[in-house]
Length: 400
Image (tube, rainbow, N blue to C red; front, side, top):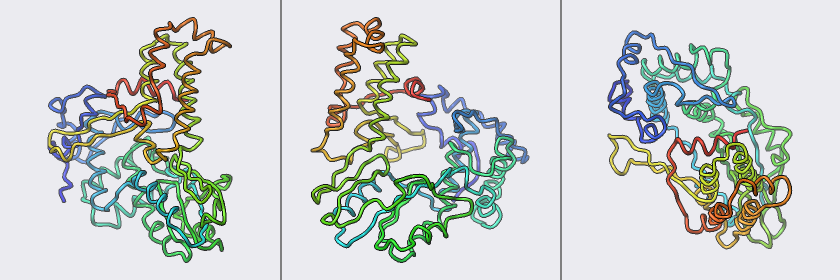
């Protein structure tokens, strides 16, 4: 596998998303300086922008961003790292809950401060010093980025927000993922980043056995109610529910019901209100309309580069349908309730909120907003195109 950093190999990681967000065309990229630094082993990464403790990949020059993407791709391919697919996991959980006939208990565990707690030096020692898989140049770039960069030198864990941190964390957790499946009594195990779900035949000391094989510095949340035993199967002997990956799984009258987790419903309602509150400040009706449209529908960003064939072009899909496509189709009460909440918010004329809204919104504007529906957006998979600049404006109003 070619690990070399060349103009062509770096440019392969340029996507349409980069153009939408930064307005930089691929032909305007200049790798002269960065390739010279690599050759002389004097590379110097610019400072990353930090928002809410998250390092922003694209806050440095695009050429350096592409360098990190290439390095990340080298590591992913060499170590066979694949990010877990949320929809596949949820679908698998649904099947297991429906088909399990033997009595089991379900345990959900959450790793505390996952990226911050990973021993950066330990994982880099494995990748840089002990393994011969990674090329000398790749090791140099990785070491320079995470060990010699002034922003990360004093940080013990992995920087949250960089895609390479997600890849290194998966390598760090490989032995744990392998060893946990060897524990007697564990019927099913899945991990999505720091969120773990376990089906077990026995309650005997399972949690302590799992704690004993956790990698260095990692700990489970001890104050979360959901980490304890949640539910017993088969359905005939118990009823209960639990949340996982944005969904709620409940068992009633021997039937599995999959809905949107309450915490996600509250988040959507909060964003509706915050959209109006921001409108009170900026008086930008177009932006308010875009926010309501965004919440009630779906969108995709075409992600491609000039070397990709049609099969390699990716469409990043998101929205009310694509985020919750596995809820029960015949049980859309939550979406109806969201519609009621939205309509009441738009129609409000009383109280401090309603009076402010009445002074700003015309009836025609209210009618335009009322055309949007969570239920319709879900059922019809209604999609809109939002460029990166618009997406940034939309979501910025919801950041706390």
